Image (tube, rainbow, N blue to C red; front, side, top):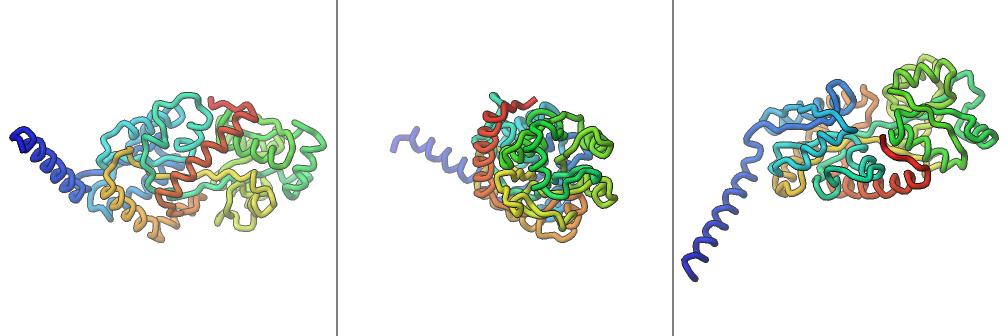
Amino acid sequence: MKPFTHALAAVALLSAACLAQANDAWPAKAVKLVVPFPPGGGTDIVARGLGQKLAERLAQPVVIDNKPGAATLIGADAVAKAAPDGYTLLVSGSSTYSVNAALRARLPYDPLKDLAPVAIIAKAPLVLVVNPSSPWRNVAELAAAAKAKPLGIRYATFGSGSGPHLAGELFAMAAGVKLQDVPYKGSSQSTVALIGGEIEMGIDTVAAVAPHVRAGKLRALAIVGTTRSSMLPEVPTMTELKLPDATFDAWYGLAAPAGTPAPVLQKLTAAVGAAMADKALQDQFRAQGMEPVMIGAAPFRSLMESEISRYRALAHRAGIAAE
């Protein structure tokens, strides 16, 4: 073997040894969780709860880095382009992983190519609600009224391509009706409009509307997700009501930059699994209207792929484009 070849082989062996040593040592410093939303929202709450438990298990600080803006694109792109060393991770909702890719013609990152899924850690079920003074006591009665008067039932969204907008269109298609979407700036505004009779229907997170349901100011007809909510356990799901095509699951996932070494991902997954088994963290999530879960990398990726395909087809049929 020539000296130059010997040198290349030595460099390769040294690099491999250094990489293995770095992987074995992970984490040797603080781990950063990028949240593409401002502090205080649902994603931020999930990240801080998880981060506290991860810090205990990794024996390193876990810091939250809020990077809001551009419908989560700024924060997600920062992680997608970060060094794949396990020290910069993304905590975000399904909009970042599937909805944006389905509804936007261009993204600065490809969630399927540029991110390595780690785990889905919580679901945030949406619930379909109406004013209690309305005559509709179940989804079948609501659908019948909507069929009798196309576009006569108005429902709240948070803008084109938002979760409530997609959920409303999925329900309309599954039930064979036409609804009129009305955009609002957020839950507080849309809830006031629904209670005041400005609109007839709302689809929002359980956390946002459960207090109003319990107070008798709203009537809950169905959980839009696939599983019942522990905060409103008496409310059936769309699947139970024989409308499985109307389901829309909002969820939160943890991902790393693509190319992160497998040993690092394995350690991270184990730490996340241990954190999610912690009853205190589970109780904290449930108190916020979320359902704690631990769904691994392979089903996480499969869900991303299926949702991108499903929402892209929905957007094409309904003429939905992200704002």
